[in-house]
Structures are given as C-alpha cells and as structure tokens.
Image 1 (cartoon, one colour):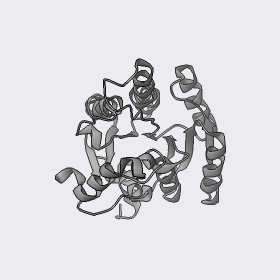
Image 2 (cartoon, one colour; image 1 turned 135 degrees about the horizontal axis):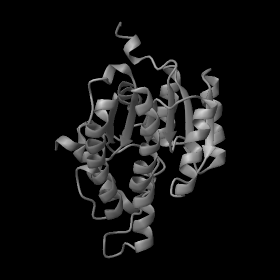
Image 3 (cartoon, one colour; image 1 turned 90 degrees about the vertical axis):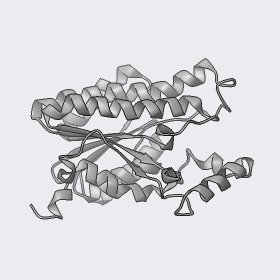
Length: 258
C-alpha cells in the first residue's frame, strides 16, 4: 500500500455529529474529499442543508439528519437511517457539544450541568455503543471523540464542560481497550483554541483578558481554524492509524506544552 492510499476513505461511511458547523463541518468535508460517504447530524436544519450542499458538491453520497442528541430515543433510528441510506458505518466522529459558561460551580445550575453532560458525554457513550455494535460484526471501525484542552486542564468558568471533556479522555481509553480485539480503533482529538461559534464569546471585549491570555500562552500566537483539524481527522479515520488506539492527539498550536 502506498503512502497516499493509506489515507484514502473511498467506500467508507462516516458519521459526524455536530457536522453542520465549526470543527464538525470541516471534518465532514475533509472525509468527503478523501472519498467517504458522509452523514452529518445536527439540530439546526438550515445549517444541515447548507453543509449537505457542500458535501454533495464534492461528489460523494451524503445525508443530513436533524437530531438533538440529548433525545436518546432518536439515536438508534438515526444510526439505522444512515446504514439504510449509505451503508454500514465505518467511522464515527463524536463532535456535537454545547457549553455552559456559568462562571463556576457556585453559579452552575443542575439543569445547565445536566444539559452539558447529556450532550457532551452521555450521547458519546450511547452513539459509540450503537456504532460499535455494527462495527464488531465486520471487524472494522474507527471512533473519534472530540476532547478539549479542558480534557487536561480545569475550567473555573465552565466546570460542566471541563468535567465532560475530562471524562471523554477516559472513555476513549476504556473503549479502545475493549474494542481493539474487534479491529476497532478509538482515539480522540483535543483541539486547542479554535475559531468557532462556540468560542465566539471569548473573542469579545467582555472576555478580553481571557482572550489575551490564550494568545500569550499559545506558541503559535494565534487561534486555530477548523480546517486545521482535517489532517488529524483523516489520519485517525483511515488505514494510516490501524495500530493507533486509545490516544488523544492535541491540535493546539502548542498551548498544552506551557
């Protein structure tokens, strides 16, 4: 196998949750450009359709499903619809998420905590289980979880988000150990500070001190762009990573080394 074909995703089916914007959109388009059929899942139908059009312009089969991942009863039907329309799922990216910048545990509400944990952690468990059940039958699969710098560091402003992303690191390792004998690799990407809608509040005057601290701490001296995760995503989704499992790859401009 030559070096180019290692990264070829032709005849693979990928699902990207939260695939209608930011990092999820970039990964979905990157997979399609590498040859995969792609299903994106998101709550906003207008954004879903916009990205679906972009995917189809790349010439690969694609579908978009409107789904709130906190509604557990919708997860199995969604996975079944993907497999009915595109085929068995080879690649799952658990990217969808929300954040509650509550200001700390003293201000965090039980409702806010539950909403973040349900989307950022519980849905990852539920959707991974569904995908793994199908993947084990074929002895092949790639599950990619999206972590965060807060998989490593604590956040005084968003404790629920930090707790969920820390748990993603351990869930990734646990699934990797369990599923490796079935030919399934489970890894995670830990983005640094990436310019997305979720991080937009930090790039305002209200949080200027935090913004300036991020730039100062990041050796690259800037925020990252969603497309800068495509290379890592395609690597983890492809045959190039067949002996890589249970790891979390930082894409952070060096933020975590300081």
